[in-house]
Image (tube, rainbow, N blue to C red; front, side, top):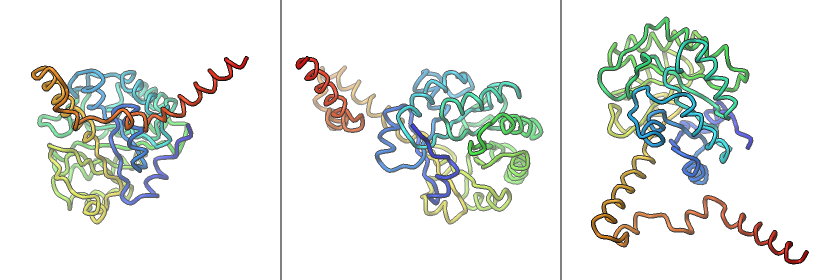
Amino acid sequence: MGTQSFKSAVKQEQPLQVIGAINAYTARMAQATGFRALYLSGGGVAANSLGMPDLGISTMEDVLVDVRRITDVTTLPLLVDIDTGWGSAFNIARTIRSMQKAGAAAVHIEDQVGSKRCGHRPGKELVAAEEMVDRIKAAVDARTDQEFVIMARTDALAGEGLSAALDRSAAYVAAGADMIFAEAVTDLSMYTRFKEKVGVPILANITEFGQTPLYTAQELAAAGVDIVLYCCAAYRAMNAAALKVYHAIRTEGTQTSVLNLMQTRAELYQFLGYQAYEQKLDELFAAAKRS
């Protein structure tokens, strides 16, 4: 499928709402709902595809499996979390080439050490700004499509403070980063400071149960935010519903009490275009009978 560029989506919607899609089916639902860009979370892949915590355990290939499945069924641009790039400059270059080939429209790479942590957890350790600059340069040099977005994420705010996070972000843009992802921002006014400092589109990660308040898209736009990311909301809701269903079936011996949580068969088929497939089968069977 032809995919529009992430840069174009940023220009078309202010701010651009980027919604997390943890698999191909949720990507279909997101597109049908009207979203203009999708996100694949590294922590989401670790938890949902691998059953592991977000501690730098997953590999590039783990993420690529889900990237390919999503880009196969949607035309929306996909922003992919590539953690720290999975290695040195050569590894990062390979990551960028692989993401482009798999159909991603953008990636973000962060300035934590290789043994990274969730951006909203304590104890994060960062590499020196110079090392992150080298990561960005390796990523920028590796891309073959100038529309492919290299976004730099900084986790410096939590441990080094706002001034250091701003300085790091400016250095990352100078190294070639197209956009900035400031993680775990605690006050709305900080986004304005980031935008003034870097002069490129900035992303706000509005994730539940984290360090950042659940600001509205309108509030974030007024603060200068260009992209609002909802990384994990859908799969958190899916998982909570699934757990209720498991408990009900195990304790009650039937799923009757939790039918209200479920998508109907008709709703499931709607987002798959199931009827069109069946019609094609009917045509093939009818042709076979005639012959």
